[in-house]
Image (tube, rainbow, N blue to C red; front, side, top):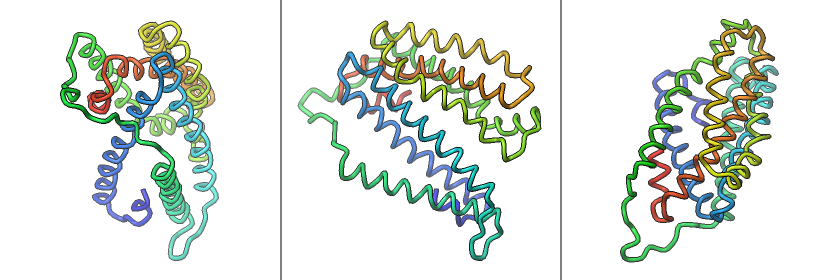
Amino acid sequence: MTSFAFIDQVWGIVLARIFQGISSSLLWLSASAITADSAGEQERGSAFGGIAQASSQGSIAGTFLGFTVLNAHISLPGQTAELGSWMLLFVVYGAINLVALFLALRRLPETRPASHAGDDVPIRWSQTWWLLLMITLVTGASAAMISPILIIFLQEKLGVGVETLSWHSCHRIGLGAAARPAGKLADRFGRKPMMLLGLGAAAASSFVVPALGSVIALALLWAFQAMCYAAGDPAEQALVADLTGKQQRGRAYGSM
């Protein structure tokens, strides 16, 4: 992300984004495997909900801080005020991640179990696995259709400016509030019921989006959809851990 502050060509941004995608996969797949390794079988839903909640809380703070800096038009030597704010944001992002890198290096324990002869067996591709992968494929494809154009929708449909675009992140409030409690419910009542509840409610609420006339109403609806997502995602992550042994969890989450 630090490179974004100094890139002045589109091809450079594309390359940086490719590298960012690879690094993000390394981070989140490992985080999922560590969570599954560390949590007991009866607490996995709550553990994955806690990870989602922490990520959402960080997203809320980061979004409003980012838009505050962007609207402040901070000048840097040799840059216009607008570009100076962008450069500062990217550099700060890189510095914060260096702090996270240091904490992970010094404080985060390794959870991968020691390998023994015969332990490293391939994942059993059962019917449950195939169905779970299909659900993940469909939900991932539907999210990818919408997420890249959300900002365009806000600007063209609702006529909002940069100063109010931060409201689109308010769905994270719902995710942050509901993720851990939903994970606990998945531990108590089972993975499947919470997945069905989350998918069904999110699908139903999506039909309302085209009729909305204000960014506040859209933010509230997204908060509700995030709560639906919070109901299903920890249950889905816990189900993957339930279906695989410790030696296969990294590959299992990579398949998702």
